Amino acid sequence: CLIAGILKLAALILALTAYRGIVIFLCVFTATKPTPHKCGLSKACPPGHFAFKMTSGAASVVGPRICLEDKLLMSGVKNNVGRGINIALVNGKTGEAIKTIYFDMWAGDVAPFITFLKEIEEGTIVMMASFDDPATKLNDEAKKLIADLGSTAVNSLGFRDNWVFVGGKGIKTKSPFEQHIKNSGDTNKYEGWPEVLEMEGCVPQRHN
Image (cartoon, rainbow, N blue to C red; front, side, top):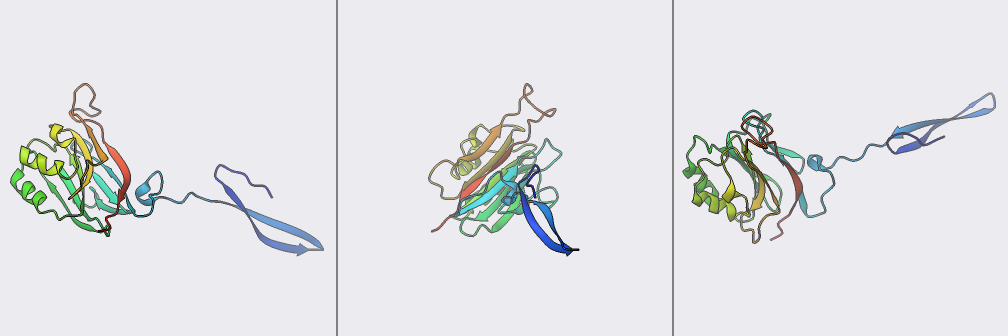
């Protein structure tokens, strides 16, 4: 029996059949598929970490997508995304979703967004993704509250920029999980909007 194929093949002796004194070895080769990682990550997260993968919105057409620990928290399919800043709050100890919500930063009011940010509890993981326009109604107070969650890009966030970010309430350093691309006529992939951002990683679990 021979091991061959694109994937790693395992030879399994299925049966030994005796017929007219001749022993026939019947071998079946089974393709072993690689074990999928949570949320489709390129590699598994180490123990004590939560796997996540997220994408920003695509222009004003396709909403953002946020996955954590193989659970789809926000997407167009779930019908819980909208124009502006899309947010998923997650318990930093258990990885369970606390709340999903979005705030319209084009035609909406920033005041409810500021109130929401102030009420986030210590130890909460905060996941944010842009859709269409995340910045027009942002003011200095809102930007500071987001910066306090670990963001470095929020102060330069502009009209129709794409942005994805994972931070936390009570974080002591700047978050390593952030991507930002400017809306620019010279580099935009879509007419009036930059390309979609995709980010994946492993967020440390909170233990205290």
